[in-house]
Amino acid sequence: MKLLALESSCDETAAAVVEDGRHVLSNVVASQVEEHRLYGGVVPEIASRRHCEAVVPVTQKALDDAGLSLSDIDAVAVTYAPGLIGALLVGVNFAKGLSLSTGKPLVPVHHLRSHIAANYLTHADLTPPFLCLVVSGGHTHLVQVEDYTKMTVFGQTRDDAAGEAFDKAARAMGMPYPGGIALDKLAEEGDETAFSLPRPHVAGSPFDFSFSGLKTAVINLLHNASQRGEQLSIPDLAASYRRAVVDCLLRNTEAAMEETHGKKLVVAGGVSANRLLRRELERVANAHGWAFYKPELCYCGDNAAMVGAQGYYEFLAGHTAGMDLNACPEMAMERG
Image 1 (tube, helix red, strand yellow):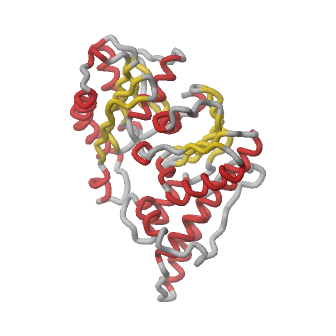
Image 2 (cartoon, one colour; image 1 turned 90 degrees about the horizontal axis):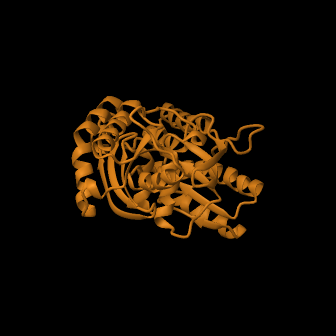
Image 3 (tube, rainbow, N blue to C red; image 1 turned 90 degrees about the vertical axis):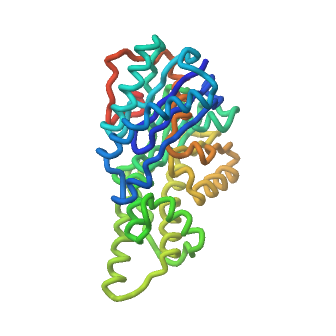
């Protein structure tokens, strides 16, 4: 079964053709990073306008790269939640138009479920059940994946997402957008023991996360040093901060795996590309004898191939939609 998949939840316009949820026939991404870098972050209105300009050529290229036409496609999958509402509407309405004009089924897909499914494209042997740490710019969740379309959120952030915490701290350190990527690269050169930073936890909720206090600690450290006329080592600060964030992620993930008696540990989302996080999760998994799965770097960030992967399983579960499908800026994964 061949799915044409569309993704427009934030600032990447993406289209892909995926066969049977596991085989990528094409994967095209048009990024807006350079334009949003001028503003230090994503500007929703600009993102929506660029999606309108890019969605047709990106979709056509995905079909061309796969050597297919719309008549060869069996269904159209699209990200409909969560995300920037204006950006989502571009993809959803375009997908509805394709579905209506071709008579192909329309499959709505939850963005975070898609990130988890990115691992199906990398690991042919990965099947539920498993525990997944989903870490991105807007979300940090521990998810018990019981089946391809049945998931339970075990823990989540109470404030900033891990990716957001990386980006904001990086900006305070003078790094360009997207700061998390720059911080990860610079941290490889620093001493992660140079600065003592907190490892916040949520009292009474051992699987939930909190990163706002850690982010504020770094911002205050930079401000106080500036007030005293001191120059801090940014590579050391980046390394120390990265270590603190990763320690928080590791602590809760390890606790959740032990609580659920898990055997398979999976990581997904844009922050799953973080070098230290990938290394440390693999180390912890090996120490416990757990199987560890991580997506290829090309599938960590937003893309449509992951939408096609999850869309296949949503279709098999009978989760299709009509022309009344609407975009949703927020939605729980369990409802996806």
